Image 1 (tube, rainbow, N blue to C red):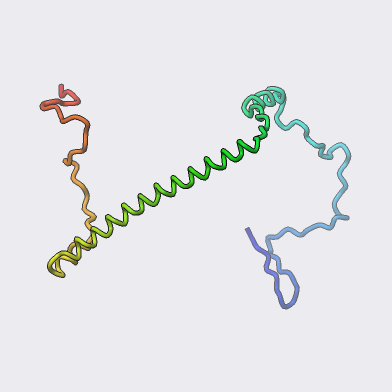
Image 2: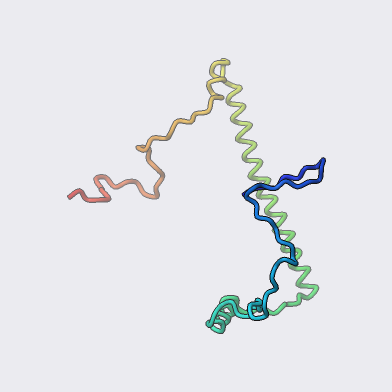
Length: 151
């Protein structure tokens, strides 16, 4: 709660009035052997055996370490290389598609006849979508169908 302020110039430490004075080690009474703390081997209580069984059941067994042959290592390396190459191809196709959309958007904006229309096209529309708007479904809506009956 309270901090000590150390003065760099004088080397004297200031303490607050609420701080308790520290006793020297020689002033403290020695503890008797009766009250010395002993190391607690079992902090879990009497159910230590049950706890250990439960812990072993939850942890399970460590699987045996499998040693791969050189041929398997090469095969796994090639699988990883192919995966890396194909994910890069997919990423590049996605980025190409996105860049094409951006280019088409700017081509459409630049094709507008007046500066006022271009400036209007660059303003973002943050209006909310109406809740009466339909959403895509697999089948057309059934005429007269009501999900909940009105009794």
